[in-house]
Length: 190
Image (tube, rainbow, N blue to C red; front, side, top):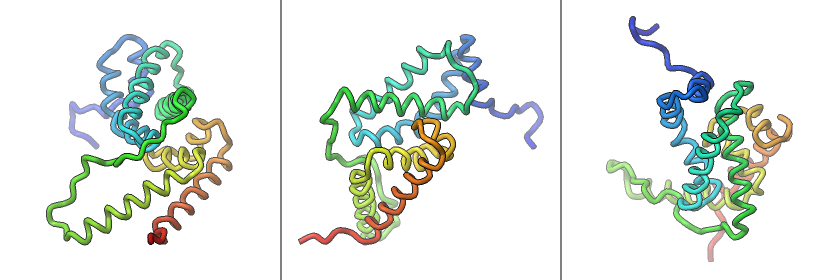
């Protein structure tokens, strides 16, 4: 239970409907609730901060412009990530050469109490994961990131990617297996 006078946080779809009716504060609450996870998802997809920022702005802009058409028939996160997925696909079509080799987490700082070898091992594992993500087919990488970065269910992922649940499940399984192998058995370097 919660203390008297406290209200439970409104559901995303309720906030979106309030925004459709002109409540700007409702939009601000939705934005604060989802902006970090959405940006992380786009950064892992785009692999470059500037590109991710461009697509991120496009997603929120599209959501704002399309608010009059919003219907709470699916979870808001499904709606939001469908827009993000479509904006990313559009971005790929516009920018055929979008591949950039960059550090995906330039601001990541190790725990000051950690041993240097632990920090190094985690950094190497992170690099192996990022390299393995780049090797995945786009469909598998997208499903994996929708699950891991956005925390969406298989049904939501299927809806976003325009596939059935079994296809989404299969793509996720292939992605996880490939990533596991890549992380456990790093490529030999000469």
